[in-house]
Image (tube, rainbow, N blue to C red; front, side, top):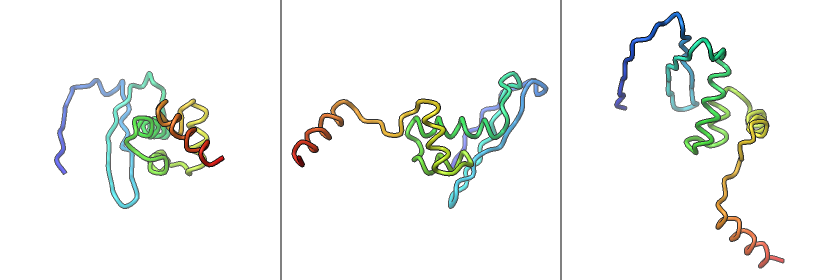
Length: 105
């Protein structure tokens, strides 16, 4: 795997560094530098990152839960608290599902 490295000088006393993410069967490491002002723990940063990966459809619900370090059910419930839809259907998808259901009835 090729990696691109971008180095930006930081005033390190203002930032926390976290290395997060381990996915079963594959390992991906990410070092995340977060401003202290964000007041995030490593766990919070990991969960928020996993939510964003799920929301942008980069990871499935199960893999995102794993990245967050949470059970499938806990992560599912957390998404509900953040009003993040579990299923993203277009209007066309919904119309098709309704037509399919009507045919069955």
